[in-house]
Image (tube, rainbow, N blue to C red; front, side, top):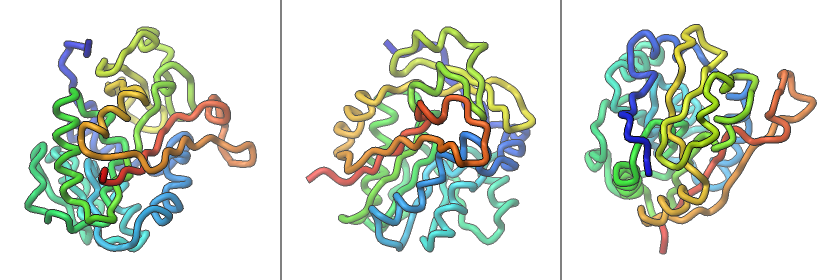
Length: 245
C-alpha cells in the first residue's frame, strides 16, 4: 500500500528553486547526463521537444543544445519564474497536471522527463500524466524518462547521503523516501516517491507505452569524481519509451 503521508515537493519554494538553479552536473548527477545526448540522438530525430517537469530549466537547456526546438513545462510557478530568469531566450510554460493538449497533439519528436516522476505520487496520477504526454508524441516520437533507481535510497553517493533515513530500506512502490543532496547549499531533506522497476513497466503499459530500451549508467574509474557506490550500483535509470502498437 502506498504511504498515506501527503507528499510535498521539496523544491517547490522560491529559496529551494534558487538553490537548485545553481546545480549543474556535478558528481552523481554527472552520470544522469553523461550518456543522455547519445541516447536521445540514437532513439529520436531532431525536431520539436517538450521537457516535462523542466524545473529551473537545466534539462530544457540540455535538450535545446542538442538542436531541438524545446518547450519547458512545469506546474511550479517558482520553478518557471527562475527558469525564465536564468534563460530569458528559452520557452517555458506553466501548466496544470494532465493538461497539455494545447501544446499540440502528435507534434513532438521527443518528450523528456528528467527526475520528474521522482516527485509524482500515485498510480492514477502518474498514468494520467503519461497518457497525456504520449498524446503529444509523433508516431515515431519517444519519451525519455530518467529517474532514481530504488538503490539510490539505501546507499551512499558522491552527491547524496541516505544514512539519516534507515526506514528507506523498507519502502514499497508509492512510499515516500528521503535523501539529502550534498551538492547544494540547502541541505533540507528531499522527499521522493519510491518506485520499483517492475512497477514502472506496469505503469508504462497502463499508459499505452512500451519500453524500447533501458539504461543504467555506472561510474568509471578514470572519471574525475570521488565515486562511492557509483561504480558498482546505478543511481539512475533511463527508460526509452515508444507508443505501443
